[in-house]
Amino acid sequence: MKFGETFMEYLHGNEERFLEKCSHVEYKRLKKVLKSCSKTCGDTRGSCPSAGQEEDGNGTLIHDFCQCEACPLCDQMFFSELMKEASEIAGCFSSRVRHILHLHIATGMQRYFSPLRRCFTNDEEAMVQKGKMLIEYVTMNAIAMRKILKKYDKVHSSVNGRKFKSKMRAEHMEILQSPWLIELGAFYMNSNEPGGGDSTNFFCSFSCDLNATVPVMTLMLPDSMKLEYDLNCAICLDLVFNPYSLSCGHLFCKLCACSAAAVMIFEGPKAANPASKCPVCREAGVYGDAVHMLELDLFLKKRCKEYWKERHVAERSEMVKQSKEYWDSQTRYMVGY
View (tube, rainbow, N blue to C red):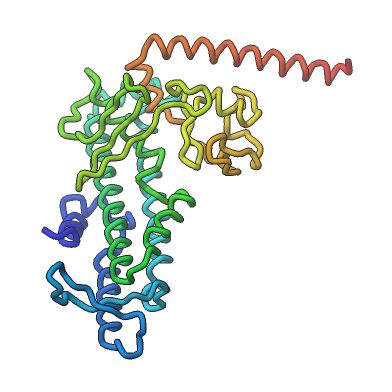
């Protein structure tokens, strides 16, 4: 079955109600635009100096195609439309993942009511099912976007599709690089723990190797695509502890991120100056939207107990030290000596 048919079947399948308020890539419509562009250039070969023909290995003509790297017919709706769709998909995905994880990791007063609520409803099973639908949602749309851009480059004999993908990564619209996808993977593996709920056949493509030279979380996608997420902190060069993901996508320990941004641990990375830059990519303004990776931290706490306890003690000690120095300085300022 061609991907276009698979994608339409997905959109009108069992998850149709779940997808009602979710944006998706207009794959079928954009493919028609490309087909129209190819046909138009074939019909107007005399007026289009860039028009050409594609041949197979035996020299047989397959079809006409356009070689205009900048194509007004496609560009006016293609890239702006895809950027809008990517933004909406990323927003929908992150908001729904946040909702699931908010219910899974209760804080404050919710921590006391959560066990009581689970006596009456099977929240874990419902969350797992919603998580499964979210991973399918983000995966299918990511593949649709990748294929339509590849098709664009083929029709126009250009590299503009690849450039657009690079632009999306630069503007943090690449949905498969979202920190919320890492959180969803950690949620899956936490749910797979004994007593963590029945997650049979859920996210079977997620795995994690913490004993490798570089600890990674791996996500296997259809078409044999594989994504690897580095779980080492780029500053201390150790497995991340109490991790934060900056909006540029780089992972750091909370202590390391605060140190790089010149803020106190108890203030947190989000208190950083807007001009502060990521220690890896040097992009400014990436601390304000930092994501606290609570599910990933819980996963590492379960899998690396001794290491987690050691880092926890070290962070607490540093926090107490910084707090004491801060309040001593405030006292001296107020008293005037």
